[in-house]
Image (cartoon, rainbow, N blue to C red; front, top):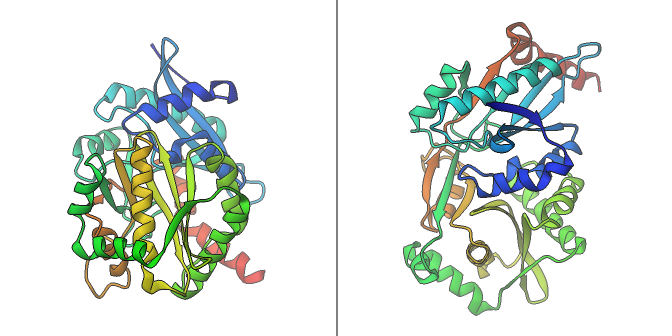
Length: 353
């Protein structure tokens, strides 16, 4: 008989062992990621499905209250969840029933998920539809909460084979950076974290994109780096840090989450060497998959995001499209307000402020 419950700190080891050893395991489902989001106003609700005391499936629910006075409603979101055998309909049905109970208790109007599942897995898509989920269309760029298109690299081959599978110019740039004297090191203190963030700010100004405040990366350091789920890499050249990246690892998967580079010394190609260093780091930690994260699904060379696609493609990975965002609606009326009226309300508040 299946049962569901919200786990607490004493269940942490069992919960994490399940996430780490499951084929669907993801850093965004870790309790530590829940702690990061908690600092941002979300309440983590890690739900497990058990049979005879053994975890069979899990989902990290993140709860956010609607910013409307006197309205005791919330939304639930599970980044890259659930962690479950994708082919087991009975497991999914039982887990979904457990989620629905939590949703009712919390006053949720919807659950949003964006599973770590390829778009051509129609069996799981049909399972979602059968259990009442509806698909959201999020566009080809970065309109979704999580990127819907990524590059993924199988890193089970040896290093020589991985290099041979790269574009020749990428191999050349990796070796050029080494010849020019670029060295890569792992961050070992929050002093290094501040250096990483300063370069990220420089990159954001140059390339005109928004970034989160420094405290967000402090939380990542405190909850993920300090617990060996993440690492920051710094590229040194002539006594200066000229590039920096943030990588995550959980089980046999690693992810490249953030990258930044100085306006200076870009000709010594630090970004290529730092990626290669992260790939080798992931292999050394028994990862078999390296995820370069988001690219655009619009592969037109005139797309401003095409350069990002080209950079990641050169390392020899596979272009991957996910199954996308899906909503389970618990209150159609408030769901309508959430999609239509709430954005207008928030824009009015912004205008007054």
